[in-house]
Structures are given as structure tokens and as C-alpha cells.
Amino acid sequence: MSAPTKPLELLEGSAAIAEAAIAAGCRFFAGYPISPFTSLLENMTRLLPAAGGVCINAESEIEGVNMALGAAATGARAATGSCGQGIALMQEAIAEMALNETPVVVFNMARNQQDYFQCTRGGGWGDYRTITLAPKDIPEAVEHTQLLFQLADTYRAPVILYGDPLLAQTRVGVRIDPPSEPEPVKDWALDGTMGGTGRSRQIWTWAMGKATDPGPGPDGHWRAIAEKFERIAAAEQRWEADHTEDCDTLVVAFGSAAKFTDHVVAELRAEGHRIGSFRPITLWPFPGAALAEASRGCRRVLVFELNAGQMVDDVRQHVHDRGAVRAIGGVSIHESGLSYGPLLDAPVIRQRVLDAMRPDESEGVR
Image (cartoon, rainbow, N blue to C red; front, side):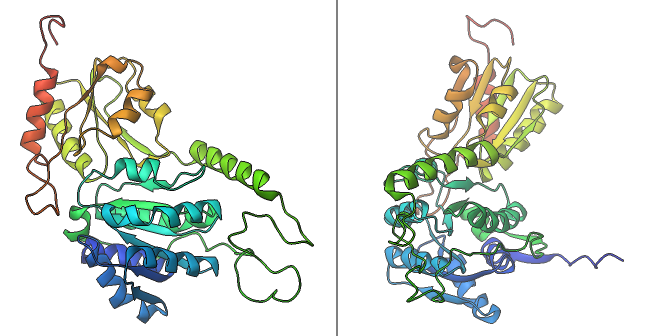
């Protein structure tokens, strides 16, 4: 007999993400309040102690990220976060996590979509990348939160959930179940059991080892790290494509914005337009091969993102005809600076898509 289905709960996005993280085994969280990340920190402060965990309101983003790093080094599932401004301060520590193979989940509850380069290129040192998932809504954010803890442990690497004000502050009905995969054994964790033996475990030594166990040395370690990220890039691409089998216009968007472009695409298809959509779920690794296939034969590839043009660089790298790519988004920020501006509106997006689909003199009829 199957277990009864857990009922839906009406939750704000930040609360749902916090509950999903705790259900996934997160037992340490540290952060510094900055909107719209603040509500996630507040929910972790409220919920984590009851689950036997620790949440610390750090004095800065730099302290918060390094606290999470230290907790993760002991084997705990640990996380931190901020919005893009605070995560800019965390870049050195995120690079250290990657190069020293310390798994941490970083929640970027961004104010808009201007952190794409930050999440996919990073600002730290060394040969590393960060797996970045960009959910389109709160139920998917719950799923991605639990997946990211598993991916962080599987690859021993920092990972990022790219959120936004809509995910943080909207209320929807969600169901939060424990993850199906068990937490892996962490035989690398610093637990104090091998002190004084000459073979104690180390973090921060780039796998150079000790005198009795030399390890690969810095060159060998850095090569192994680079090879690991190549494996991740091949194995962890995720995307969503709709109506691409016959489209001559393809709209590419990510995160919450993709919910709006999907609505517009559905409307236009119902009116007879041959239009499809493509959403990269992993911003890194970017699903380039899937985009190339989805855009094959398209006359137009329209990129909608709420920034001056960031993901469009990755789109141009992978489509068959770079000349078909056109950015139809732009910078659009609420006057408070804390949320999206008027461009994130389905009728506005629809008009931009229609304007881009209008034939010019050289193109002839559609």
C-alpha cells in the first residue's frame, strides 16, 4: 500500500524553499539580510532550529559564506545566500569551495535577471564553474533546492539556485516531500577522528596530502578539478523545449521570465503562428546542443531576458545561424531597485515578439 500523499500547503516562496532545504538535510545556514533574500534568511531562522540545525545571521556576506564553508567541511549539508550584490562579496570563498571540493548550496534571490554572468562565469580565481539552476516557479524551486543539495554532494562542489522576487514573495500551494536519494557517505569530512595519526584529513591543501600520503600535488589536483567540471558539463544539462518541431520563430528565456514568454508563445500558436519556446533550466552547464537542435531551421531566435544582454551570448554560440538571434528584452527595474520593472508583463512581451516577427523589405512574407 502506497504512502498517503502529503497535502498541499499555501506557502510563500521563501518559506517553501526553506522547508525544501531542511527536508533535504540542510542543517547549517548563514547569511546577511538583504532584500529579497531576507525572507529566506528569516524563514531559515524560524524553521532550522526545530529540525536540529543552526542558522546564523552573520555580520556580513563574507562571514556568512565562510561559516557555510566551514560547516560543509565537517560533512554537514550547509547553505548560504544573498542577492547578486552580496554574492559578489562571496566570490573568493565560492572559488575556494570549488577548488577544495567543499559542497555548499548558494541561494541567489536576485533582484532581477542581471546576475546571469555572475552565476555562469563567476568572479573567483582558478578553473571552476558553478552548477546553476534557474526555476521558473515555486514548485520547481522546491524541486531544484533538493536536487542542488544532491548535486553539491555528488560532485563535491558549490552550486547555485538563481531565484528572484517573484519566487521569494509569491504564495502558491506546494507539496514538500523528503528527497528520494539518501545523503551520501562523506568519508572526506573533517570529523576529528584521525587527529594525531599522521593521516588526518585536510581541507585547503589542494589535495597535496601529508608526508605519509603525498597526494597528487597542486598540478595533478587542478587537472583533476578541470576534468571534473568537464564531466559535469556533459552530464548535467537540463532544459525545456515546446513546439520546436515546426517553428520558424523560437523564443528563449530563463527563470520566472520564461513563465511569461511561455504564455505569449501559447497565445500566438493558438492564433496560427509557427512559434516555439526554449528554456535553459541549467544556466551552467548551458544546454547548447539542445538549443542547436531546437533552433535548427528557425528564421528567428528571440532572446528575452531582463538585462542588457547576457544569456544572448550563450545563445549566439550554439544556434546554427547567429544572424537569426535578436535580443528582445532589456533592463527593466522597479524604481525601488528591488524588483522587476514594467517589461515583465505578458502584453508587453507579446508586442515585442510580434514586432520582431514582422517582415522587413528584404525578408518578404512571414
